[in-house]
Length: 153
Image 1 (spheres, rainbow, N blue to C red):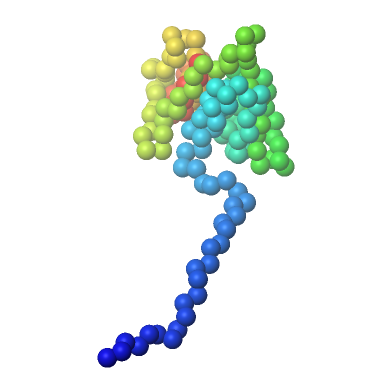
Image 2 (cartoon, rainbow, N blue to C red; image 1 turned 45 degrees about the vertical axis):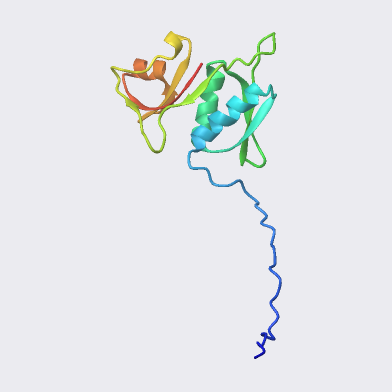
């Protein structure tokens, strides 16, 4: 007996290009910011662009105030923040290390009595408190604690 073949012709699979107009969603935007700064400093880039948020602007202003970066500005109609990195005379980055402490999966809090010291006082701990984002030194002066976002040294 002869087998009958189906007379239906199958269409070839169509491949469609996915065009993303925006950056993919990031589960931890602060860790993404710190990683971008760390990678740009290691690669000796002059500046680094990061998607903007109010918290990232506050962290950038702390880095500027503490002398870790040369400056920052909003670009691309306020959608990105461009951070200008700072280097010493030998072209070594001023930022030696960045570490994210409190993550979405594991929050870390510090009371006013046990605020962290980074590199025995040579670094900066960045906290978010009820009075805004500030360094551990500023939080100690204000007598408040908060969530430890990260360390910079």
